[in-house]
Image 1 (cartoon, rainbow, N blue to C red):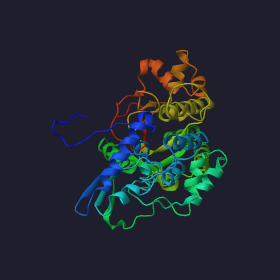
Image 2 (image 1 turned 90 degrees about the vertical axis):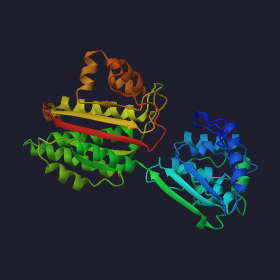
Image 3 (image 1 turned 30 degrees about the vertical axis):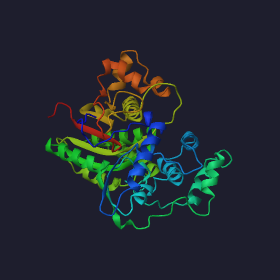
Image 4 (image 1 turned 180 degrees about the horizontal axis):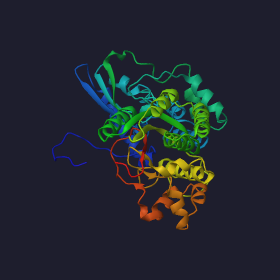
Length: 407
């Protein structure tokens, strides 16, 4: 950040690779000291987004930064959700879970929040430094027991969690705190919908809370694409088969906000000539089984292409030939996993083209090596390269379908 010589803004960097470190611990201490020195005449402006948990570490003594990080890593390695991770983080922090707001009392506190968590729970975004935590110590014990960590966590963690009263109580008065959500996946999707409609697309937002294992979500999008491409055919048995598979998969994933009945009704009533745009957002998960390089967005795009290729090979996807279809998945922060790409886009033809050039898509996927595939295939043409955007409201998924040769 470029600052004027006499600027009163102080920049403190830390949390390299999104992990709390000595630099972020020092910054958190400075922030706490500033907050505790405020009066009723002051206003504390807090900007909150994903990554805030690592940027504001303030462990409750006697827990050390290293011990708190050990607990976080143990939970992450067991597959704990971000909600569970942040519940533990808050219980072991002086500033999370409303701690920063309490430190600033009686000053007015205004928090402007960008959500990077499904459902926009303000108490969990960056572990809610200005939001009183609705969780208690019993919730922490249940999470640790769930992942068989009760006998592994450091002794200091037990010391803090076993205290009859927390190191800091709930907010003495929350009337001085204003938490405002200024950016979310839903807002991003609504703007994308507006832009797509201006381009002439029949546009539907499926959900802003798509989650689940990436291979299962890929099947869902593949079925949506197949169903749209079957809309003008008389193949009712195949339509019924795809619709039934789609309903079953939607029930399995239990995606919040997805109204499958209404979505199918709108799609069935659409004109064949009008292009279709399906939008969704959220965060999928990848089951790591290889040593390759990739991210959930690139893997999702490649798996959608593979599912469509398999549908064509079985004969069920013959209707795809009449349409041009593109699937895109990208991270709004501009970085998908440990790669330089934000995501990737694919089509029903991608796997066939790749095979003709000697690429084994299934082998790349089994090694979680989607970035390597997209980098090598057609010189990275299918990679979504945006650069870092400076924001993060999770991922955006887009499906574009139009009659081949149409406008």
